[in-house]
Length: 126
Image (cartoon, rainbow, N blue to C red; front, side, top):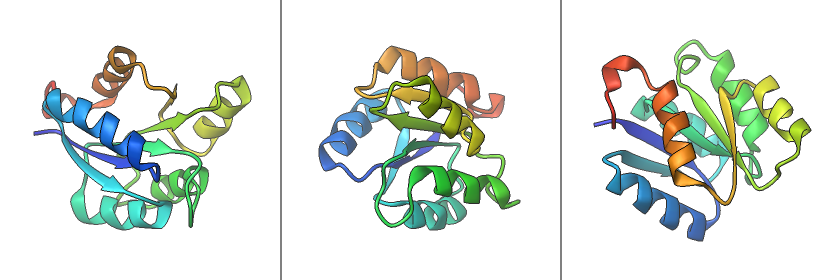
């Protein structure tokens, strides 16, 4: 089963998106801040990370930079999620190391397409 690490501090967002992704066949792990995400990524070896950018403790941009600079977590694809829809927000997330960017509220079909395009072929369809 494909494992996604969802990094989000808003409980309503966590509940809504994690339930929708579970129904699609994904295993979901939740981290509430950037430091927790780094620890969980090392321990769980997720297939993909969904990363909110406005996080407590360590924001999503710095978390992505740290994950992409470490050999053990560099290959894990990261999709940034943000309520900010400005072009510069997307560019900043990509510059920090995120592989893709999507806006909130999440459009599930669009997000699923992005997830599947970034998953290693061995991970299957989820």
